[in-house]
Length: 96
Image 1 (spheres, one colour):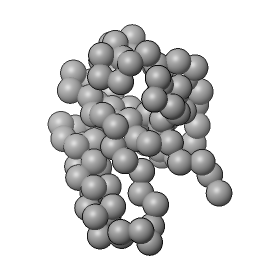
Image 2 (cartoon, rainbow, N blue to C red):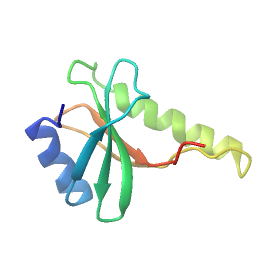
Image 3 (cartoon, rainbow, N blue to C red):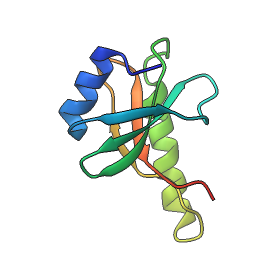
Image 4 (cartoon, rainbow, N blue to C red):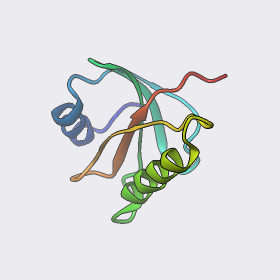
């Protein structure tokens, strides 16, 4: 399993070179990968059948959780969202 070419092009335009995509769990209905970016690792997931606004709603929810949690809960930062293809890239948090 790998990233669709159009998604990879869009992600690289926003995040820099996307290297070593490795499938990971955690997305249920989405395809999920750990990728290496110039700034470090990231969690990237996509769903080519997602409705419009699907990942934008997730980004808003994560931002709201981060704001409400303060220092009490680690919530991954949103790094980028897809426009031409439905995807989201998040800060990679090591499982604990």
